Amino acid sequence: MSDIILQTENLTKEFRGFLAVQDVNINVQRGTIHGLIGPNGAGKTTCFNLLTKFLIPTRGSITYDGRDITRMKPAEVARLGLVRSFQISAVFANLTVLENVRMALQRQRGASFDFWRSEKVLRQYDDRAHELLADVGLTEYADLRAGQLPYGRKRALEIATTLAMDPAMMLLDEPTAGMTHEDVDRIVTLVKRVSAGRTVLLVEHNLKVVEGLCDRITVLARGQILAEGDYAAVSRNPEVQAAYLGTDPSSVGVPEGAHHG
Ligand SMILES: Nc1ncnc2c1ncn2[C@@H]1O[C@H](COP(=O)(O)OP(=O)(O)O)[C@@H](O)[C@H]1O
Ligand SMILES: [Mg+2]
Figure 1: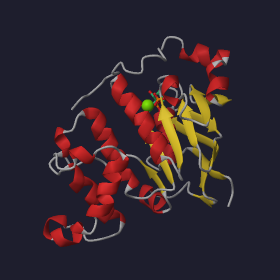
Figure 2: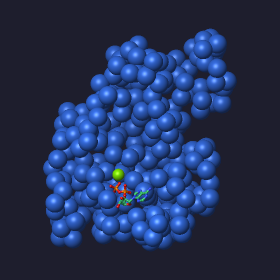
Figure 3: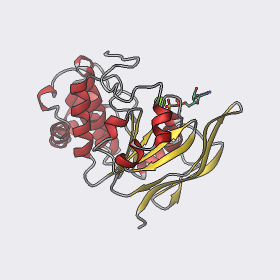
Figure 4: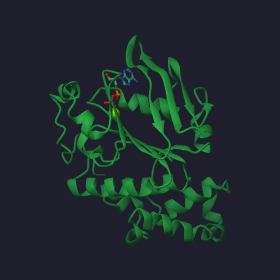
């Protein structure tokens, strides 16, 4: 088994002649938290969507765990253990927090999807669901309808439903977007905790969020890799600082297009 779990080679995505991601070569070391950061418009989300197979690259390749996954579908890579948070596209607002996690577990294990008729079957998942809720700090919210969760807690629930798939590698796109300082701190702690025994690729606008969380950071700007290294190295890189000028890296808690729904 290679130490590199995820690798891109000349990953490129063109939108009608515009290079949103250009010749990006990323190597993610197994068992690490790897940050993919950059100012707005850098190509982070495009890159994320390429890695999770929601977009097809214009050229280049993606290798996961020694396999070429460039042409695979999202569900196929998920079965290989590469899972994006929010893979299960949404949290079901009318189900309770516990029911949401239970359903994710049921889905993972390939059980029947007509959950409303198989209450007994679902009970089997209760223990594991409660464990996952404890992992993400949602125990006290177990019986609340997901739609009534505060925004920051919803992201925690989404992480729990992702963990239900028992991924070897998790991809998170701006898990702290639109959060208050308090929620940001909680999600940072949470990501750190759930990363044990896994690999995490974290896409993040904000340098501060990846500080102390990421082992290695790749900085994108205008679709290309600008710098790479640990937090200390990239944060003092003048090119990185220049790329971040005009954006505010300390705006962690300022909801940028925040939605609290
Ligand atoms: N579907 C698309 N069609 C055309 N341009 C796009 C599309 N998606 C993203 N872009 C452009 O690609 C660039 C990178 O966008 P994005 O990946 O969303 O950046 P980030 O997530 O770093 O803010 C932006 O200039 C954006 O306008
Ligand atoms: Mg983005």
